[in-house]
Amino acid sequence: MNKILKYAMLCTAGIMGAIGLIIVIKSARPEHRMGLAEKMGKGIDERLRESKDALDTATARVQSIFETIKNGKA
Image (cartoon, rainbow, N blue to C red; front, side):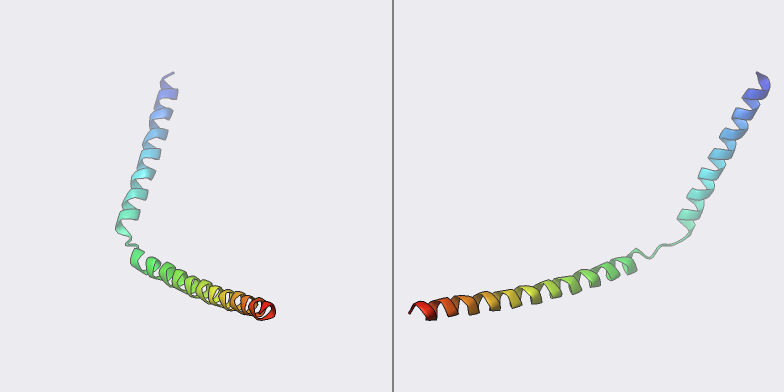
């Protein structure tokens, strides 16, 4: 029983040490979150521009169809 307790304590100490090491490494390594946000923002702007262009194209097509219908009835 004494060996099992020693082994459990050793495993627990190892796990706690590994978690502590991960925390220290994560806090010491700076992450450039602003750069990531800028990249994401550029992608969103580009997609928004593409969506706006597609909407403008669809609007022009619908207007031309309505004008054709209107001219055909009149």
